[in-house]
Picture 1 (cartoon, helix red, strand yellow):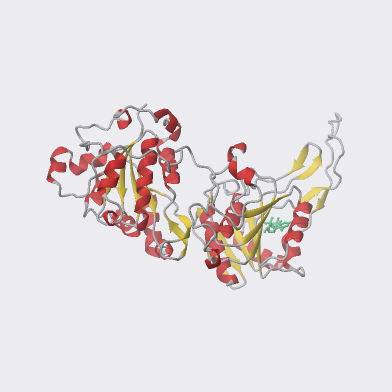
Picture 2: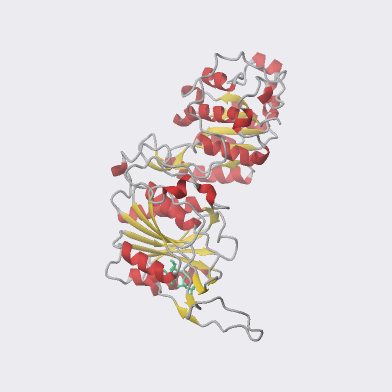
Length: 485
Ligand code: CTP
């Protein structure tokens, strides 16, 4: 079947070189790419490279008489199945949000009736600036898919979110946006005849450039399948469970966890990371409290928020111990994971992991366990159901916060279904925590991809905007890094 037709707008940023790899991935996946290179983009990559890789003419200006006669920018904007802006700079996002149409790229974006996906890349402060936050929110409200940038070390030397998502992730997002399951796998198209990958892009509308000299064998572009987890380049802090990272497919329904260390310059610059030299302890997931050999008490926690926090702490340079209840997630790169089942096992593992500079207790610990665990499976007796006697579990957070080895910063979570902030303020005092991250779990937060939290401290309450669990994790780790600095 025909592959997707992508109109790729290459903005002007240092990450523009990665657009070349994206072109290769799209083509390898059976897609067709036509590139539009902005004036800024042309400072970083040449039209020649994009033409050679895409085997299509590259469009650079609104004022090209030949283009206007042959296709016209309006038609150009409508030929594709999807318009991808990569990298999407702060300036380009702003102009998109405002509906500016002062060059070919923005004119196409305004004229198109096709879906648009943007992969942002910019300095961390620019990404965090209110204006960019506003522009991204505006674009998302308008239906543009704006990907979350990766976090990591930036070309400018600063650290945080703003790095262009890896081309594999952009390709995965393209596939997801267009219904990836319908697309051919790369192997299936490897031997495609010239022209078959055109995917219905009418050659009389988009002039096809003479194919450049054979593109070199694809030595670097990885397979363009859906990316779940890939191994980072961490040397100093290897994951303790490489198996879980290398074979993520073993867990059905596992989340797509972007490797926060991917493509970063190893751990060579680790001493410059905000949490370098700190030990961060994280609890995550539910606990399972056995009733008999086959039954247990549990809750809906997926562990995603805790795992995202552990991943962000590792990416920010911390040594991370993750004490995890039973979840179907891979160990984030650079994280030491200790698996437990019950609350009492979790309490023991936490005590063994101390001392730590910060403890972030994200686990949804079962408050109660069955008082007597039956040695054999409980049977229906044909009369009344068995009365389950419960005993209270130890409060791990309160124990750590009032213990001899208390970390400098103790952060708890509060899963509430009503009076979210008031209950969290009460928990802050009751458990002697420094901060409580409060969230309303009456919706689909538990197991979902997003979260909306309030940071409750002795000083007051910060209401954070609705965001992905990864974004909440990054913000929290940045705040923790500031507090520990
Ligand atoms: N927590 C813990 N040990 C427990 C219960 C909770 O360490 N036995 C921690 C959680 O990891 C979380 C915080 O305490 O950081 C609050 O958890 P939550 O379940 O909301 O609080 P509870 O103390 O169980 O209060 P309640 O169920 O009454 O709301």
